[in-house]
Length: 429
Image (cartoon, rainbow, N blue to C red):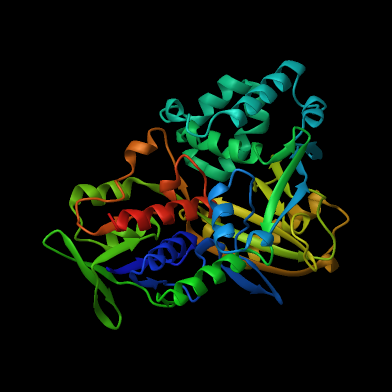
């Protein structure tokens, strides 16, 4: 059996290592951070263990369900009927069902029908039927399907706050897959239903780590890989602060933006393809409150007085001791707000929460935390499937992937599990 190094202990790296150790390979999993999970990692939020960045489960997430069954953890997954809201021009509107759409006052009747029909048929489209959308830009696709007015009211500001200068260069296939995933997480056209793992993502992360160790694998936290050693177009090992470790194969699951620095000996044309993949960061605030902001799990915000695209009230999905709200600021690292102090960005976000719920006072804010992630969201432009370098490139026994390779699907633990198992299979072929 092979001796294999897996770089990155997020859900994808854990799934890869778990599958490889099941096949009796000798596996070492390396992680720069001091904890498992990547963007799904937990932290101690004033006595509450919770993800630094929000996660939830949708009904199409089959790879996750299969893994939970395999780990005898299916009973840890719980489903909840959730609500969605839309805040537009100073007013909070119900959202997410035909009645709320038909009563939405800021679109005319024809625009409502076009939008509803477009979203309905997009959510019903087969998951493998996306190739014709790969080369289409999302803005044009949404305007054509829903109408220009619906795009301007419901999508334009959300896109510009989420994707900034990339807004006009996004793949329709990628946006469609996001619509489909949430759109199919319903038990009827009137009721959305989302899931959570009891105890949060760390319940699954810890179980995967335990299985890896039981199966003979090793996990090295706070252990950055400095370089992947290549000789004669073949992987020979990795360089750590402690020295060189020899390996038969290496699998990288960290963001592609780190690859040119981690593996500088790759062919120049391959390095250039990694450099072409765009990504944006996030500053994500988490609030612990005495009272909820709204009764929604997800609230989209398309309002000129707000510089955030929405909030996620996790305590309206998971039973938690206090009300917990995520306020994400997605932005390129070059954006001025990315370098704002925690205090400054918290002050702005707190003002937004008070606008959403004027009854929320300073005395209702129990705790606030800010987390930053440099490469949180790949930007999938038209033709993205052809832009990505192959997972197995010119170097023998080297596999490279990150969340970009979920395309056209969005980031989720389910897609991490799916690709992690694929990487393990590829490593054995």
